Length: 135
Image (cartoon, rainbow, N blue to C red; front, side, top):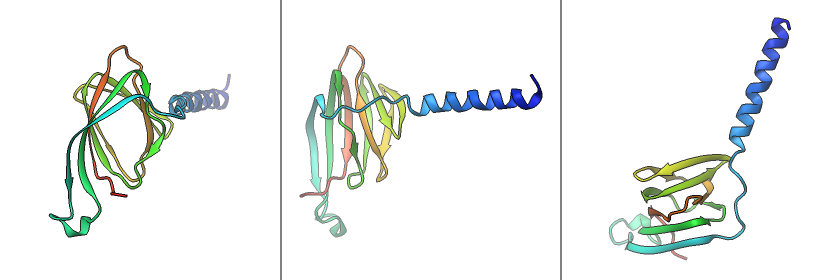
């Protein structure tokens, strides 16, 4: 094999490896299942920040049961922060699968379009803080 063929082979193998990583996320369920949310606090923001009229600061404890998953959803109008309180959760974002464990966290911005699942045999508990707009 000459240098050019070897380089082409390495490049092709790299593309296949990156491609399999980028699309290893799986398919989101059509409906959320094995999911519950307990509201811990909510604070209407307009009294403190008039420009935030119609928004609240909300904190929830989200539980994803073993085998449970959320449907794919956007955070275009609802930025947030997520902290893994216990267990393990897999987040699928832009075709990339990431595992989060107790003590880990992630941010949800306007360009976040994702879904999450619990493939373990124990419930996963998340503390979610977000800024939902009142309807």
